[in-house]
Length: 575
Image 1 (cartoon, rainbow, N blue to C red):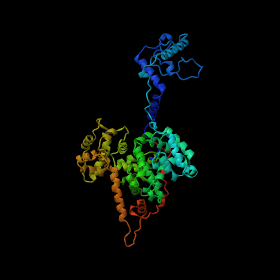
Image 2 (cartoon, helix red, strand yellow):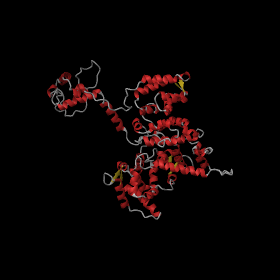
Image 3 (cartoon, rainbow, N blue to C red):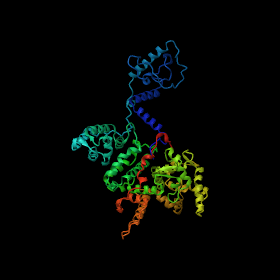
Image 4 (cartoon, rainbow, N blue to C red):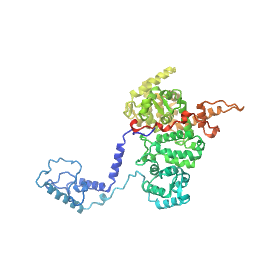
């Protein structure tokens, strides 16, 4: 999904961040301590109404706005918050009200200074909010910089090219495949190399301001003026992975597939990491995810297919082949009729319409043209084949929540189940009445509120996949019906290193695709059947396991730029 407007309000998140920053200020803590002392001992140091002070007002010296020296006496009250008590009893119109108030404010300040605070209330609250990671005293910045300078001394003219950045990344104490972000973060793409002075200045600033790997990685990739990552920010990093990882060496000659693979990985990153559905990955989201651990594993694992969470080429191969089969005109866009053919029309037409309604896609392009891009299809396929992950549950919940009220009503469930009943009747299978089906689903989900099912209920339920398949996937619904409920619960309770539903699906489909390609190999007598353009393209996508010659891509596909799906902010609208 391309970046765009956020799908839900994020103003509260920013307000909370500013509130925590304000709360950690020393002046704020002193003010709160003084207010707490006044609450515990009411009447002490409180000026009377006869002195001209408004009853119930905050002390002027605590909340007054700072003023230049010499303009007004220190006791002059400044603008403050709304008064908690009515101002009717204030002698505001008295002849000498201003002079009296000024002297009263001075007495309050003098009294507060003379009375020492108790040790318990005089201690400052320690900082507890670290948006860029908790500072570490053990980091010796000068030692790190010295090591980096020694590494640059090995290069001609103390300038590092992209090929040299692996040594620089190690000198910085970073994983090997941070070399791309380090190179581009120092501006190396403009001149083709990075000088030692520019790199040291950049890395010193990062060490002083960013105190964990998530903050450093985000700072290296993000655009100037941003504190988040959008999809385009990952392209240089992933292009370097494609160019240099040994598990992707066979892709060097197939440059037209680089953007397809990169797009797939980017969508999988946002699918797993961007839990806010905002199209912007924050430092907190990056810190909570396993993405950086997977980046570190790129150096240790030569087989890219072992990194199944983000980088697996086999997973990309399966996703792209499935999309290629549906995209009959190969313009990298599919309509509702194309998507309905997925898995032999297993998904109901009502659900297909909901996907194209914009419930889980961004931009008016979908509603205007009635088509979705390859990037949207990545989200669809992963959500369709593994309905147990938090993102997939949110994906299908958005589709089923017709009125967008955050809960699935019985009307919405019946709306989707009606088509399931009609399809079962056409297959000469007796459908379960809706009331009986509803009782089963309520027993399965156990919602906390009667009459509606919330997203929290489905996430708490370990059989969300059974729930969703019952209402819009006829094939998987019949598969679930053939299994006993006990076996379903046993599958849901299984924990440990067992493969996820998506990993099982991708492995099975990849084996099928490889078998189909192997069956289409040339005969031993030297005769080779003529391949269609589609077969040629699918053959080219395969890894070197089959040792098949790479075929040139058809011109319509090779000329496509997959990143043209991005549109301007004026064309985007939140879900």
